[in-house]
Length: 356
Image 1 (cartoon, rainbow, N blue to C red):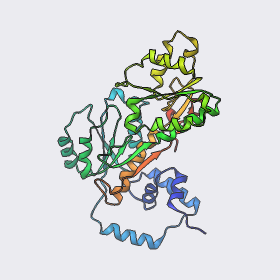
Image 2 (image 1 turned 90 degrees about the vertical axis):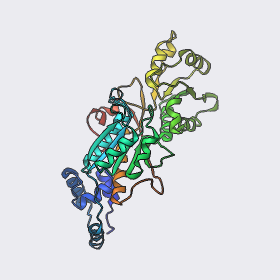
Image 3 (image 1 turned 45 degrees about the vertical axis):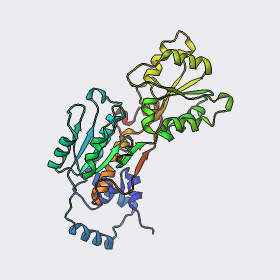
Image 4 (image 1 turned 120 degrees about the horizontal axis):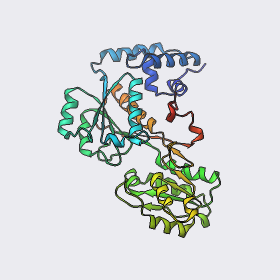
C-alpha cells in the first residue's frame, strides 16, 4: 500500500505541510486542537511514521542549537481608521494572526502609521526582543517604505500583498492575473456581451499591472466587435472621486452592458451622478469583491489566505535555519474564487473561514 504523504494529510486538513509535520511530532508550537485534527485525519488516511527517517531527523534536531522564536513581528503602515473590516491589509493581518496562533506563535504588531519609528529604532527593538520571524504587510497605499524592509535582512522574513524587487524576500500575493481572467470569463457565462473594464492606476501599477493583464487576456474571448478598450482611471489618491465627465464620455462612446471595476465604491458614485437612467442601472462586477459591496458578483481574492501563507513562509524558513534575503525568491500566488452574496451567506465574512 502506498505511503500516505504529508501533502495528502495537509490537503485533507486544510493546512500547510509544515503544520502537519510539526503536529505529527507533537510539537508545542502547534495548538492542541490543530494537533488533534491532524492526527485524526492521518489515522483515517492510514498514515504510518517512517521510523528510520524520524531517527535521522531527531538526531539533526538534537544537534542543532538554533531554536524557533516564539513570537513573530508584523510590520504594517496603515492608519487604524483605514484598517476596515474589508480592506486587504486588515484581512492580511487577520490571516497572519490566525496562522501564527495555529502554529503556536505570538504576534507583536508594529504599525508605523500609528507609532512612527525610524528604521534604526525599529531594527533595535526587533534585535533587543530577539525576533527572528518578521512579516511585512506591504500595503499598496501608503506603501511600506523599502528602508524598513532593509532592516529585515538580519531576520527571517516574508512580505504579504505586494512585491518589493529591491528587497526580494519571499512574498505572498493574490493571483491578480488569474482574477482578471476569471472575472471576464464568469461575466461572459452570466450573459454579458460588452463588458467594460475600469482599472485604477494607483492600485494596479504597483502590482505590475496584474489586474489589467488578466482582464485583457479575458477580453480576448469577446468577439472583436464587442471587445472594448480598458478604461484606465488615472488619479493619485484612492480617496479621490472619479472624474465623472470622462467616465460618462467613455460610456457613451463604447456602450458597455456591464462594468468590471477595481473600485466599486467610486464607480457606483460616478454612475449615480448621471442623469441618464441606463448609466445608473449598468450592472457592476468587482475585481476585489466583498459581500457588502454594491456589486452583483466578483472575485474574492482570498486575502486572509494571503496572510496565512506569509506566516507559512516564515515558519518554513525558521525550521530550516534560514534568514535574510533567500538565494531564490519564492512567490506564492493565492488564487481567488468567484463569489456572490448568496454564496457567502455561510462564508468566512460571516464568521466561518473557508478552511474551517
